[in-house]
Length: 145
Image 1 (cartoon, rainbow, N blue to C red):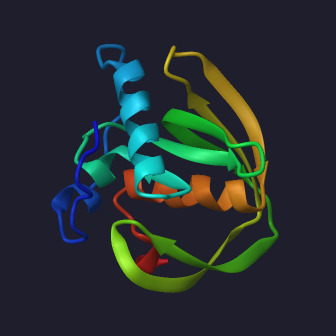
Image 2: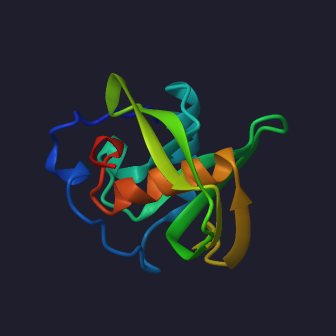
Protein backbone atom coordinates (compact mmCIF):
# COMPACT_ATOMS: atom_id res chain seq x y z
CA UNK A 1 0.00 0.00 0.00
CA UNK A 2 1.50 3.32 -1.09
CA UNK A 3 1.35 5.96 1.63
CA UNK A 4 1.91 9.70 1.43
CA UNK A 5 5.27 11.03 2.56
CA UNK A 6 4.84 13.12 5.69
CA UNK A 7 5.74 16.78 5.37
CA UNK A 8 9.08 18.00 6.74
CA UNK A 9 7.43 19.88 9.61
CA UNK A 10 5.44 16.84 10.85
CA UNK A 11 6.26 16.10 14.50
CA UNK A 12 6.82 12.40 13.77
CA UNK A 13 10.05 13.36 11.95
CA UNK A 14 11.33 15.38 14.90
CA UNK A 15 11.10 12.91 17.77
CA UNK A 16 12.81 9.67 18.66
CA UNK A 17 10.85 6.58 17.63
CA UNK A 18 10.65 3.91 20.34
CA UNK A 19 11.90 0.34 19.76
CA UNK A 20 9.66 -2.06 17.89
CA UNK A 21 8.50 -4.96 20.06
CA UNK A 22 7.27 -8.43 19.25
CA UNK A 23 3.65 -7.32 18.80
CA UNK A 24 4.08 -5.40 15.55
CA UNK A 25 3.44 -7.05 12.18
CA UNK A 26 7.01 -6.89 10.90
CA UNK A 27 6.24 -8.61 7.60
CA UNK A 28 3.54 -6.04 6.76
CA UNK A 29 5.82 -3.16 7.82
CA UNK A 30 8.74 -4.53 5.77
CA UNK A 31 6.56 -4.97 2.67
CA UNK A 32 5.13 -1.47 3.08
CA UNK A 33 8.57 0.11 3.53
CA UNK A 34 10.04 -1.60 0.47
CA UNK A 35 7.02 -0.80 -1.73
CA UNK A 36 7.09 2.86 -0.73
CA UNK A 37 10.87 3.22 -1.02
CA UNK A 38 10.76 1.84 -4.56
CA UNK A 39 7.63 3.85 -5.45
CA UNK A 40 9.30 7.11 -4.39
CA UNK A 41 12.59 6.03 -6.02
CA UNK A 42 14.56 6.33 -2.80
CA UNK A 43 17.62 4.41 -1.65
CA UNK A 44 16.25 4.33 1.89
CA UNK A 45 13.02 5.07 3.73
CA UNK A 46 12.29 5.16 7.43
CA UNK A 47 8.88 4.17 8.75
CA UNK A 48 8.21 7.60 10.25
CA UNK A 49 8.64 9.20 6.81
CA UNK A 50 5.37 7.52 5.81
CA UNK A 51 3.63 8.14 9.12
CA UNK A 52 4.38 4.79 10.77
CA UNK A 53 5.47 5.08 14.41
CA UNK A 54 7.82 2.11 14.10
CA UNK A 55 11.58 1.95 14.65
CA UNK A 56 12.39 0.48 11.23
CA UNK A 57 13.66 1.44 7.81
CA UNK A 58 14.28 -0.10 4.40
CA UNK A 59 17.46 0.55 2.44
CA UNK A 60 19.22 -0.61 -0.67
CA UNK A 61 22.44 -2.24 0.51
CA UNK A 62 23.82 -2.93 -2.97
CA UNK A 63 22.41 -0.99 -5.94
CA UNK A 64 24.13 -3.20 -8.50
CA UNK A 65 22.40 -6.32 -7.18
CA UNK A 66 19.20 -4.58 -5.99
CA UNK A 67 19.89 -5.95 -2.49
CA UNK A 68 17.28 -4.46 -0.12
CA UNK A 69 17.23 -4.95 3.64
CA UNK A 70 14.71 -3.88 6.26
CA UNK A 71 16.18 -2.98 9.63
CA UNK A 72 14.13 -3.10 12.82
CA UNK A 73 15.61 -1.55 15.98
CA UNK A 74 18.85 -0.61 14.17
CA UNK A 75 21.91 0.43 16.12
CA UNK A 76 25.43 1.56 15.29
CA UNK A 77 27.86 -0.29 17.53
CA UNK A 78 31.10 1.09 16.10
CA UNK A 79 32.05 4.11 14.00
CA UNK A 80 35.46 4.12 12.36
CA UNK A 81 37.50 7.32 12.37
CA UNK A 82 37.57 8.15 8.66
CA UNK A 83 34.73 10.53 7.81
CA UNK A 84 33.68 11.45 4.29
CA UNK A 85 31.69 14.48 3.17
CA UNK A 86 29.02 13.81 0.55
CA UNK A 87 25.93 15.62 -0.73
CA UNK A 88 22.72 14.17 0.72
CA UNK A 89 19.08 14.65 -0.16
CA UNK A 90 15.92 13.28 1.39
CA UNK A 91 12.45 12.27 0.24
CA UNK A 92 10.95 14.21 3.18
CA UNK A 93 12.83 17.38 2.20
CA UNK A 94 12.43 17.57 -1.58
CA UNK A 95 14.81 19.76 -3.55
CA UNK A 96 17.11 20.31 -0.55
CA UNK A 97 20.69 19.06 -0.69
CA UNK A 98 23.46 19.51 1.86
CA UNK A 99 27.01 18.20 2.23
CA UNK A 100 27.11 15.94 5.28
CA UNK A 101 30.20 14.44 6.89
CA UNK A 102 29.69 10.89 8.18
CA UNK A 103 31.91 7.94 9.10
CA UNK A 104 32.64 5.96 5.95
CA UNK A 105 32.62 2.63 7.80
CA UNK A 106 30.38 1.42 10.63
CA UNK A 107 29.46 -1.81 12.40
CA UNK A 108 25.73 -2.16 12.97
CA UNK A 109 23.11 -4.45 14.42
CA UNK A 110 19.48 -4.75 13.42
CA UNK A 111 16.63 -7.24 13.50
CA UNK A 112 14.97 -8.49 10.33
CA UNK A 113 11.24 -9.02 9.80
CA UNK A 114 11.50 -12.47 11.43
CA UNK A 115 13.11 -11.00 14.56
CA UNK A 116 16.54 -12.47 13.76
CA UNK A 117 19.43 -10.23 14.82
CA UNK A 118 22.14 -9.35 12.30
CA UNK A 119 25.55 -7.79 12.88
CA UNK A 120 27.22 -6.41 9.75
CA UNK A 121 29.89 -3.96 8.63
CA UNK A 122 28.84 -1.28 6.15
CA UNK A 123 31.18 0.87 4.08
CA UNK A 124 30.74 3.70 1.60
CA UNK A 125 27.28 4.48 0.30
CA UNK A 126 25.38 1.80 2.32
CA UNK A 127 27.01 3.14 5.49
CA UNK A 128 25.76 6.64 4.64
CA UNK A 129 22.22 5.44 3.90
CA UNK A 130 22.04 3.46 7.16
CA UNK A 131 23.18 6.51 9.16
CA UNK A 132 20.76 8.84 7.35
CA UNK A 133 17.78 6.54 8.00
CA UNK A 134 18.80 5.91 11.62
CA UNK A 135 18.93 9.68 12.11
CA UNK A 136 15.29 9.84 10.99
CA UNK A 137 14.34 7.32 13.68
CA UNK A 138 16.17 9.48 16.23
CA UNK A 139 14.31 12.64 15.20
CA UNK A 140 17.33 14.15 13.41
CA UNK A 141 17.19 15.31 9.81
CA UNK A 142 20.15 15.67 7.49
CA UNK A 143 19.84 19.48 7.44
CA UNK A 144 20.80 19.45 11.13
CA UNK A 145 24.05 17.62 10.36
